[in-house]
Image (cartoon, rainbow, N blue to C red; front, top):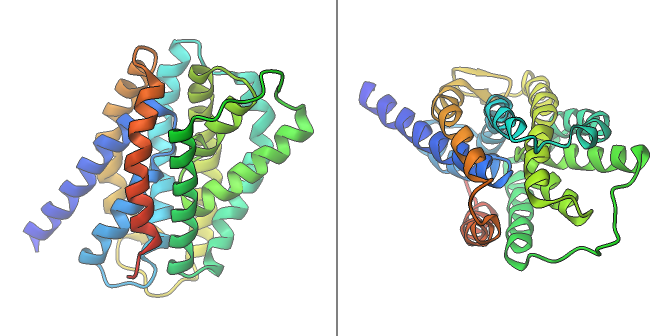
Length: 268
């Protein structure tokens, strides 16, 4: 029993180390990695029909913690567009809570397919690197509130954090790549906060949940992931200002294609 716990916790630590670094470096939601890894690992450590829900809720809860250290590092480089953050926040909070709460009406297979499709689209966006119209600018408060609502709702529903969707949205509106990554990391905070609350509320009435859960949050995975990621997220954020992010995003895009395939064919 003890050996099994050590093995399980070690998987969460390794996942957290990689996730924290990638999130800080690329401005993506760590859930793109956490959710596929957890849906694979949890099959071996628990017997539940709610595995995808647990993976997504736990992912959001970890992003809430890991984003703080990444935001601090980006802020020190004066890269966070706090004016844009404020324009998006109201919509993000509302959308993320709704996204987490409505998860109870989807079964694991459906959530897995939604996640896989989203991850596939994000991977293609990274690989193709489509250029925006140079004259395009960010909309005003109404437009950003709507964009924030849609970003928050979808990001929370599949547990990827706001950065995954906010980065391409900002780049598409001609915000510089480094500012988009930094600001997207900040947007992950309200997404993770409201989305986690939504998943906790939705999971309180759920059946077939394992021990050590609150709502859909699985605490052993949560603590294992954050213990490692809080140290590696700032490292990724610092390197984001020194390395060729475009090349890194393309390499990571290939990796995401593999994870997307895994989620699309999830059968547990």
